[in-house]
Length: 357
Picture (tube, rainbow, N blue to C red):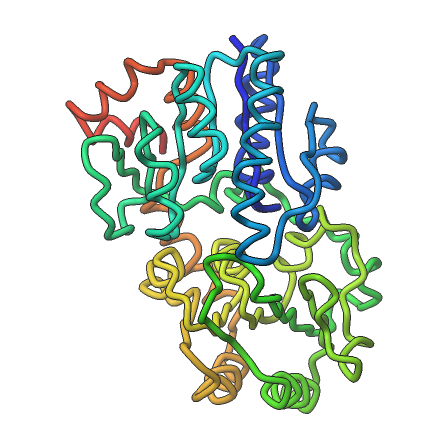
């Protein structure tokens, strides 16, 4: 069986990597397609996946419209040559539309609830797999599961933090440090949204330093202000999860990284006008704290840093979170291998998913 997986974000490489490795070992032929946006190409190459890049992502509205036509055409050519039996993605309009054109099935994951994007792929998709906390009603195509996308690669079954991260960061194992994430706000779903201004970023950095933490900043597209560039994190992209797992705290505008930190049991603060339901879900467990703006952020940071036995407390919260979720990777492998019967099974018996704890 041949499977095409279209990637739109570095996190999507992580979401599908364990599924792809497992299926490849069973004899499935897998090819990834992507656009050169951030670290997608680096990760696909690092993990030794077969992939094809369609070039740089477009930034302007006109460029994005052109990109929809151009990337669809490029994907169509690849699909005609590769002849996939099934298409997978995290909400890719390109994979959905090409699969429909070639009369093949497309299965999409969805956890953000971005209505604009969903409208572009849902009509061409056979199944939309979403976490149970996503409020969007996507109709008969929707399958709800009790888990979190980041668990597909950060569940303890698949991820063990590597202590060599301290050497990469240049800190000792006992030295507290914070990871901050600032985004570029160029993505389509970022239109009209905002996070922190420069003064707020500076205040955040200064507060952390005053509390004795070393600061590392991850930033998209080299958008880091000149006076903060010395704090730029300098590690290979595949090691960012080791850094998050061992960090004292994460604070930032990056929703995915906020969720990853929470899943790893690291105190996490997400600051953005964009609501992400997976982060709201983790706030119920006391793992991620959500803010629409900078108001109250410094106070929450200080409150977290003052918690006695903080690491132990957050590990307990992490375990409670894990206990309530299924193993998403095992679930997805079963779903793909048994498609389309698996879809009918879950429609008839949604609790079947609990076999994948």
